[in-house]
Length: 292
Ligand code: SAM
Image 1 (tube, rainbow, N blue to C red):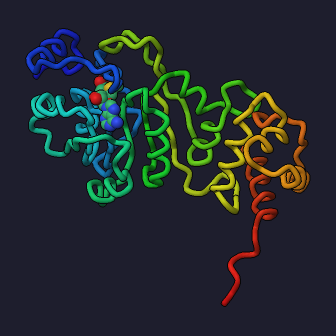
Image 2: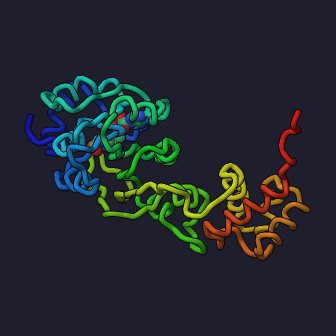
Image 3: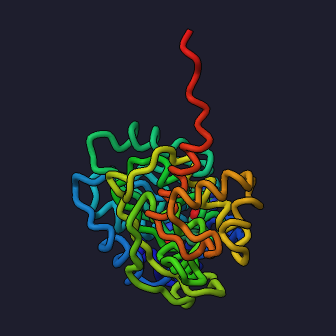
């Protein structure tokens, strides 16, 4: 097998396997050798690292990961790619392909079972249509030290955006609560076959070992965040009322947290959201279950 990123080799390989690209599965395969190499370099792997890859495609990134890490487990949803991967990854003893939808897997259980004893990380060129649910699942698994992923540039910018910017939203807060994000580099559409319409970015998430600020109830925090961004043109007070909080509770919580009710939710950073969530938690606490 020649280079897995050579345009003509990819065409020939896929033709031999009668493979046709699926738009629904976000199949844009890399055809520029520097990209999988730099993604794998950015992930800072060594033989003590266990990598979870989502969507190996024909295996060009998988091969780079296999050359650097202790073990690679790659989840591929498209069964038609299994014989292709068997050919392209032949002889790579530290790679295992799991066939299935990554969104239906328990990623923490998978990492515990298949990457036991290694430092678990994620490294992947993600299918763009399911970027947010996949990142959510990785972060909620709470076991991956770093997640180095290629996604749409615009989504990467939204994830990294701070208070007051148009790109800042509930998903920025969610990701930044769990991890410290940074954009490593951009990848132009010409590096893919077929070419996507948009530029991509490689984003790295460094999982936080502890929350950035203490909060009593994370569920309440994200309820407040969703409500605050639910109607982002409204004042925070009105957005919270529109998001299911009772007006008297909203007034009292904003006052207790020392936040101006006339401000827009998009102005609040993580410490303000945590303070506000704690104020709601105290207000709505029912005193706990009666002791019998
Ligand atoms: N890693 C390859 C590369 O860089 O050339 C392919 C990346 S391509 C953008 C996304 C891959 O994810 C495809 O192989 C696609 O079949 C797979 N995929 C799409 N949805 C998936 C899902 N829910 N679970 C697992 N794999 C998925």
